[in-house]
Length: 249
Image: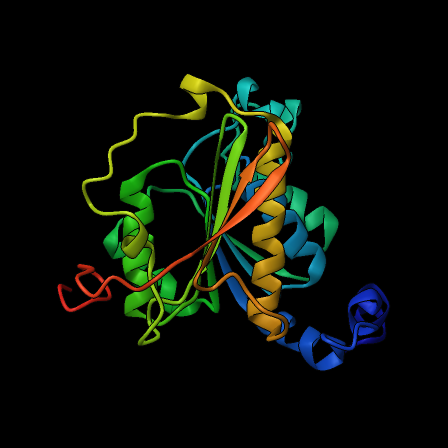
């Protein structure tokens, strides 16, 4: 690392679990962040600050006034700007030494087929099942870890999926293709710090995955009840009939 990098990341390299070797792994990694809203905003900002060498920020939507209650990568002066571009500006201001690319279109199977093989990890923070399913399938196919988060009202959840591993569940083991939820933040609301909590956990799990330390949330679903500020954990099991990673795939 350069002297500037040694200074910037010294609080990481001072940690025995990370050290210079772990920080180099971060600098040599690529993370795709799907969705630059309430979850993707803090995740992108922390990963930029942490020195993940290349971020790919994917979001087709534009910044709206109603986003600013919780989507902290954006501000009032950027209303009408693409969220991916706004988030890149914010992340570049935090750390100008990393590479940041943007994808300003709806992700589908074809675009994911091009993007996911480039990545060391994928963070999923979209608000719809079709995108979540497509991202999961691409991650399983290309053996890329998936850090998934969701939040609505006062509740949140986060997990790490490594569906490419023989005994590990993937996202579709948790949710079937018949999952039906019309709930969105626009319809039901969300407490702004809840998405920050979940997005920050996603960033922490991503750093652990990339640098190779600690125990990740692989095989575990962490649930947050923000009204009581209680966390609980559910053990996840591989579904042998999963259409993506099981015998049904």
